[in-house]
Length: 407
Image (cartoon, rainbow, N blue to C red; front, side):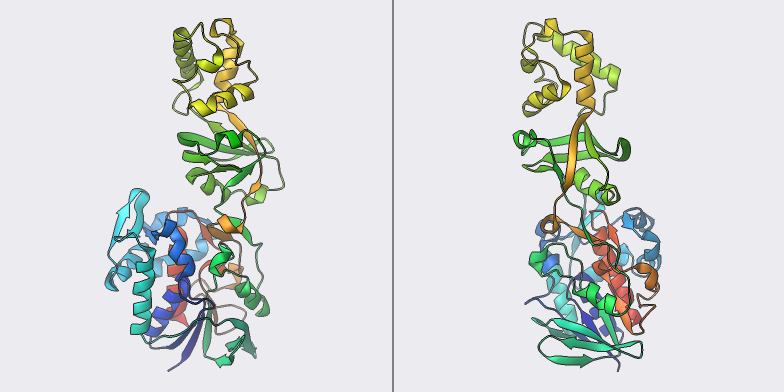
C-alpha cells in the first residue's frame, strides 16, 4: 500500500484525503490548527454555501482566473457529483436563490462533521496541531515532509492543500507557496479578492448602513468603463460593500495603478427622458418647497444631501426657481453618482485569495507538479479564483478529488 501525505485540513485537503484513502492509499492528513475546516466553518456566514447547482458549463463562467485549467477537474468531479457525495456521506442539502447549495441545517459545522466522519471511516490518520516545516525532495521526486516538531515523515506522494492567505485568523499563511517555490514553481502575485472598496469621499460616513437595491454600479479606470453590474450594494464607514461590489473586486486588481471611479445609477430602470419626466411630476407637487425637501418620493432620505452636493446645486433653492439645466444636472447625478476608489479592503475581509501556484506548471488532469514528481496541489493555493456563490469551494472539491485519485 502506497502512502500519501496531505498538507492542509481545509476543503481541498479533506476531499483529497478521502478519495486517496478510497483509492486504497495509506493517508496521513496534516493540519496546523487544533481542528479541521476552520475556514470552512465561517464560509457563507456560517451556513457554508458548498457548491452551486448551475449547469456544469456555467461553472466555468464564474471562474475569474484560469477557468480552462479546470476542465478536467470540473468534469471529473462536477457540482452534481459533489452534491451526490455529500448526500451519500450523510449531509442533506437544499438549493436557494442563485442556485446556491447549503446544508439543510444551515450549519457549516455539519459539512465539516460528515467529512471528518468519512475520513475516520476511511482510516485516514489525522495529525492536528502539526505544522510542516518543508517538503523533502530527492532526485526531483517529493518523498515526504519535515514537520516543525516531529521530524521527517516519508511518503510516496504529497498533496499541498494549504489554502490561500485570506482570513488569517483561521491560520491562513504562505507555507504552501514556500513549499511550491522550493520545488521550483513560480507564484503569481498574492492579493486579497472578493473584498469591499474604500472610497475617498467623506460623505460615505453619512451614508453608512444605507443599502441600495436594484442599482447599477460601474467602475471606470482612467475614464474607461471596465466593469458594470446590477443588484444590491451597501455603504459602510470606509466605502462600499455588498454583492455587486464584492464581485467587482475580483476583476479590478489589474487596474490598481489607474484612477478608479465608482459610478452608481440609482434609477437604472429609467432612461434620461423618463427620469426627467418623473422629476417634473414630483416638482409639480413641491413647486413651492426647497430642493432639499422635494426629493423624498424619488430618493432615500439619506441620499438626498449627497446627490444635491454632487450635482453642484443649491439645496435651499425653491423648485419653482430651478432652471431646466439645473433639473437636467440633478437627473445626470442620479444616473451617475460618482465616487473615487482609493483601494480595496485587506486580508481580514477577503473571501478568497487571488494568485498562487502557476497552473502552467501543474498537470490539469492529475494536479501533479510538472516540475517535481509525486508532488500535487489542490485548492486555493493554486492560481485559481471564482465569484461568490459556491464556486470557490467547487474548485476546492474538484481539484482535491483529482489530486486524491491521481496520487
